[in-house]
Image (cartoon, rainbow, N blue to C red; front, side, top):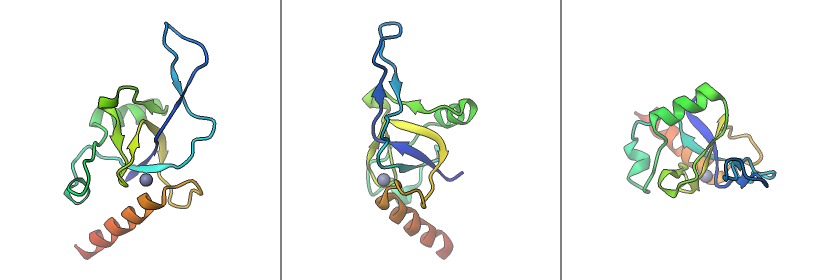
Length: 119
Ligand SMILES: [Zn+2]
């Protein structure tokens, strides 16, 4: 898996569990963005925009639990490869043929794959 699906927002439960209204997936998830499935920095992406990638541990947890990972603290927000801030990682690969896939992310993936094949 090279790119993980990610969302810019989440909803919250309508009732509190332990005084906390837990984050849940939005009914209408909207645009799905791509995030690098690697904690290793990629200079080609990172220099253009300030990118915050998921940590190795966060990627591992996503794969182990197969559950969405919510980032409620702004300090933990991540960046999609198009530069948008994302707050949810989905336990699913980013698919370019998904009708909700972000066009900017697709363009960026295409550009990166062109560079890869030129290497
Ligand atoms: Zn995007």
